[in-house]
Length: 464
Image 1 (tube, one colour):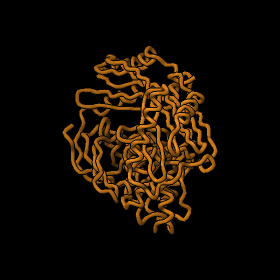
Image 2 (cartoon, one colour):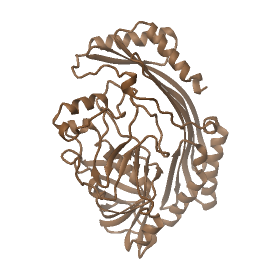
Image 3 (cartoon, one colour):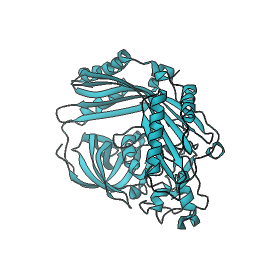
């Protein structure tokens, strides 16, 4: 039995109760909920513990070319009936959409795939166990004379989707996450890790690394802005690549807002760059179905530097087949990446996985040894897009930026503002590390490697 007493059978019963209420036209019921708990600490002491449970039932009706959705957290018959009638009322006043497809059938949606994303030990963790993980991080800070702040969080979630065409989906998963910042007088260090299983999150180990970064970057020196060879740790890579993900969708291509417009099938990245979308990868999380219940298909977004495939919802795929893009994407199909309808975004590629051949992967230590002069970057923050087509981003380094000279990590440096195109950056990758699940602060988690990049553009020094 899952949190809130919800399991697949009870979700199916809720759907049947909605059906018995006599919906007009087709009906879809999405049920989401779970429990999230977090222990926060600052100034080397625990400051907060929160624990929240939630459950939401979202009902979508479709009458010909009109559709609308209404949600409720009431699970009794009256609450479900009220939400259903509200969705029907909203649908009646919508403009008819000639491109709106009928709800997906169970045959079109594909056979269900079960993912092992649930861990009983993680689901059972309570406040005392989270506090112990926080204390382990704080202990490192006290030993090193540093000031620590961060969080340790656990949770479990479930997601179900049913429709009147026979689609029935269920997914549940757990998560654990530790994040810590270590601060000294004029320096800081940071680390973060997220995993489906708490046993895979090494809170103390993260604290040790963050503390070392804070110590080693003390009394930072200033380096001149300019182009540098940089070694981006996986967290920094994640937060840059996250801005690229939205371009790998059919709707972005149709609306001429993707950096791939005019470039699909072309060699626009380095030959050492291969990026896929695969929810079944061991380092990934999330359900194996999309917002309409279509099973997610693996995609080769970039193959040896060539932009190959994009994510598409059912509606987007139908539009692509009728557009001038049909010659470029002749096999346009629903890939299982659609969002809940109605929406204006279409679809999203959110299970990104870099692929690096075992013989090609280099450790960060090897990358450092191969660098005559450059910078080691722990993470980036306050990132904003400057140019959508070239994916030029601006932002700053933070919490551990170091000078590399003659193949060795030297002094910490004052943080720098960068102005760098991601498309160009992925043409200039000299080395790639072993991909692993990585967390940033500006994007979603993905399976990413460290990267050694030449010619990374920094434009000015910050004040810290």
